[in-house]
Length: 150
Image (cartoon, rainbow, N blue to C red):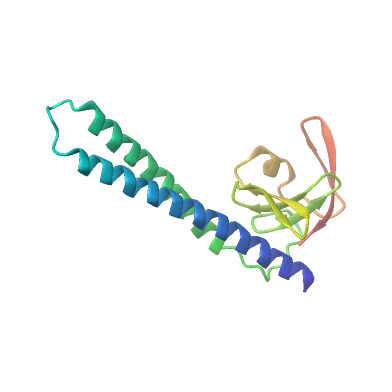
């Protein structure tokens, strides 16, 4: 049960970080829109300052969409599923590091232990996909052993 609790905690931490990121992007979008509105009507057809603000807003809107998609991906992970092979939603303990197969978020710290949240799209996951406890896989000329999966 401790393993499932750990997985639930990691999901919650990833959700928290991703939600904070989405809120920051939303605030930046609002600020850019406000600046564009405060700037007034376009001075001429090629008002570069206003166009620049709106382009930044549109770029941030794409980032927000991506962030919201990542949140929905995290909601698909069932913390009660105990994986016996490396797959989406698994926590993988290797002889080198601890990996949470979810979204690309990087280092997540829980109880002073580092876990790396990685996506199923990264090469590291592809190298270990489908492997089971006790098996080895090769990544960047290193042999890595899987010590536990859950």
